[in-house]
Amino acid sequence: MKNKFFPEINGKFGFGCMRLPMVNGEVDMPQFCEMVDAFLDSGLNYFDTAHGYLSGKSELALREGLTSRYPRDRYILTNKLSTHFFTQEDQIRSLFEEQLRACGVEYFDFYLMHAQDGEIFEKYKRCRAYEIALELKEEGKIRHFGISFHDRAEVLDRILTEYPQIEAVQIQFNYLDYEDPSVESRKVYETAVKHGKPVVVMEPVKGGSLVNLPEEAQRVLDDLHGGSNASYALRFAAGFENMMMVLSGMSTVEQIRENVGFMAEPVSLNEEEQEAIRRVREIFSSLNMIPCTACHYCVLDNDCPKNIPIPELFSCYNLKTTFHSWNQDYYYTIQTRDRGKASECLKCGKCERICPQHLEIRKLLVQVAQEFEKE
Image 1 (cartoon, rainbow, N blue to C red):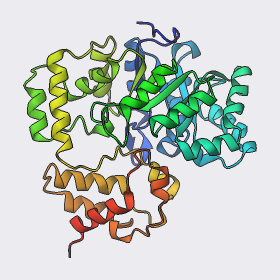
Image 2: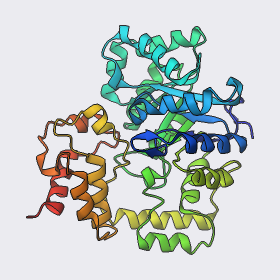
Image 3: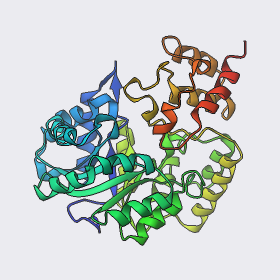
Image 4: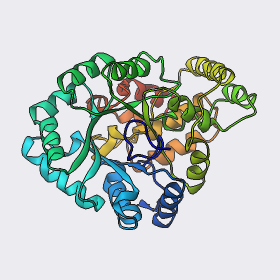
């Protein structure tokens, strides 16, 4: 069950702490503690967070639910240096120390330069972020140094060429994005392989899109008479040779138990399952959905000047136009009752500059407004 790239890691399935159970805006700690216990009891031990997840509540929940309840050798903890929280070099170390305190640990097993793309990478270079992270590794405050990445393969090639010290690359990878020209999952994966870097998978079920399938796609997977929709998506990602870890952002104890049931020792998809996945991909490509993963980077820290709940409005749009959900007009009204409507977008472009999917958000909000604000 040991990870072939890093023996301190058990298996290749990790607990992504971005979508924890919430009650009245706070993490549901009794349920989260039960989830942590179930995950560790399965023999797995990899947890992933970032300073901005759940507006800082993810790190604090890990301190209360994991690091204060288990000895340090029972878990692997990954954190990230996020671009939202620093503007100059002298802020990085204090931010890092704040993250250590928030999580209740003295070191991180993995520390990633977060959400790297061509523009963000240049900022990190100006601020010597990579060099500072490597210094922290020398000091023993980081065990392993890596990046998470959202851009074209050629940008990753440049980063890995300039910083061969990178030990792991976290990328968006799922069967829907595998050949998508805007995400380039396959090409990005192959670039990491070319540089000899193990890969961590984020968004293996594409923000839930590969769990809640359109009716035609659902029939394809139902005909397999096998596992759940999530199981096919997670096993697809895990089946590639250079995959070090597949993360899942789980929010219930039931999801933990279901997923570890087939991911503690994942089995690669067989030929019949691969063909079914190919057919599901074709069905999705014909639907013209907005490929938002609800990461919320576009609205983090109230970046939108009109406070438009962009991911939620995109979800309303997809559910109405693709799944013909009858009550999405009602939910659109709920989402915009105290926040901005799609039509109120100022076209400032702040959201597009940070979007990992490189979506043309301003144009898409026009579509959303046309669908829900017809009168």
